[in-house]
Image (cartoon, rainbow, N blue to C red; front, side, top):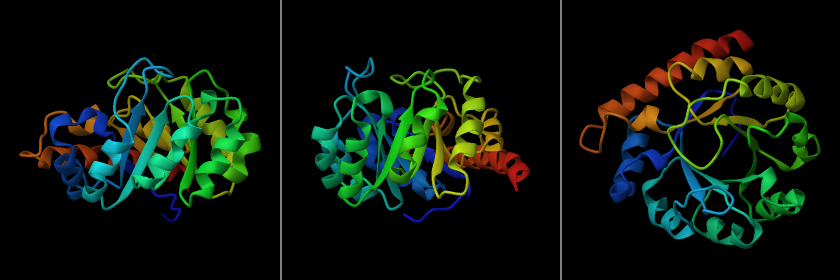
Length: 233
């Protein structure tokens, strides 16, 4: 998983057909996605329960790109090994999930996988300053975590710009998660984000029997983001 500042689309399988995860992962990859985003929720850190490491292990054979595992759980540390063994390429933990985030990131990195840090909407950009040497990705939540299909929080665009300035020339991805559509993707791309998580905006209207819809949706989001990102070059 080498760094690239190019726009990457990471569909969240939280919005896909739960009864057919393997086929859904294959379908979105065939239709042009860059990463597969897996939202893990525990019903404690966030008000919802989704799936765990065993599900990640089950779908790993169907994923040929990047398995991007977003842990919306607390605590994180006891479960890192399980998600590494399940095949995660990148594990993102929330800075709000525990008192010792350095230890969490060190534990992830020691397992040989990429480490990300996620920030809830109320968490300031400056909170990552002392973590820059430990992270490969910053995930800016543009909704309050816990449910799919929420409305994009425009207040977070400024935070993305601040994070881009803090990162400077470091090879750290800026991911945006929540409410990403054809309309909002240019806003975050122009602010400096390069990894866009999209759930409903990718999967709505399609299925494993109608995968061309996924491809069309991915292309629309990517094209809008890439046009906006040109302003940064």
